[in-house]
Length: 49
Image 1 (tube, rainbow, N blue to C red):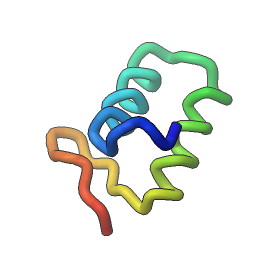
Image 2 (image 1 turned 90 degrees about the horizontal axis):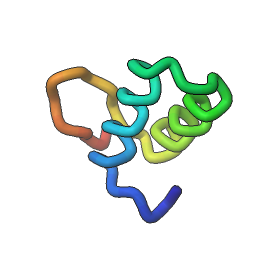
Image 3 (image 1 turned 60 degrees about the vertical axis):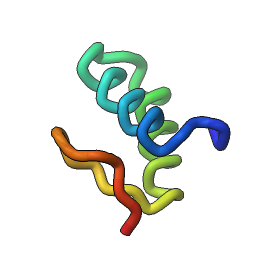
């Protein structure tokens, strides 16, 4: 998971939610987003806090 760029991670999370993929997978992506302290805003680039 660490090899994904911040942008790719955010995009993957959004697509997983939109496609209603497995909840555990979505939660893994979200945990990594939180670990990196990224903001989730639709229509904006991934930004560090």
